[in-house]
Amino acid sequence: AQSVAQPEDQVNVAEGNPLTVKCTYSVSGNPYLFWYVQYPNRGLQFLLKYITGDNLVKGSYGFEAEFNKSQTSFHLKKPSALVSDSALYFCAVRDKKGSNYQLIWGAGTKLIIKP
Amino acid sequence: GAVVSQHPSRVICKSGTSVKIECRSLDFQATTMFWYRQFPKQSLMLMATSNEGSKATYEQGVEKDKFLINHASLTLSTLTVTSAHPEDSSFYICSARGPGQPASNQPQHFGDGTRLSIL
Image (cartoon, rainbow over all chains, first blue to last red):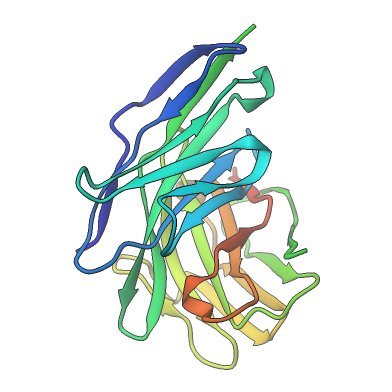
């Protein structure tokens, strides 16, 4: 079965510093990976996805993620953090169940950017 | 593009009443929609996958008769929590798979969620 793990419950970064939110995956076959962000009392917003192609994927709000097959990782990164980046971040992997495709979600990582 | 609207955003009602939550794709047609439940400080729990024109596929442990899902058109899916009780209080979120092909590669686009409180 497909799965993703987000090993950190919370990440604290000072504003202006680079940030990394970690995600590792376990899949059979090629992975289809996604990152989403959730602000308080809101739904999730899509940031970026990896399907195939370049290992470095660029997404919304200046975020990017690096797909690393040998380390089975898909870490989310941003060169310079903003206070407004503080939110809950979810990594997900696509899974097929019967005839349906669905996302398997990580537990989420709370990102706190301190001014 | 790919905007999903969920309504209402918050519901407070008495135990025993039924509550309907609507999920609409505003600028695209959504063949597949998903309903999630999220507990405080936890990840999303998929309740069911809703395909337009067919019966929803429920995840294990989710009561079909309790959580009625209707996906009658390509832009609307509804979740009805029947005879709601305090333990049904939660944050319910819908999503729709975005347009484009292949469909299975497209990201899900989410509504803003419904905070359901049963007294």
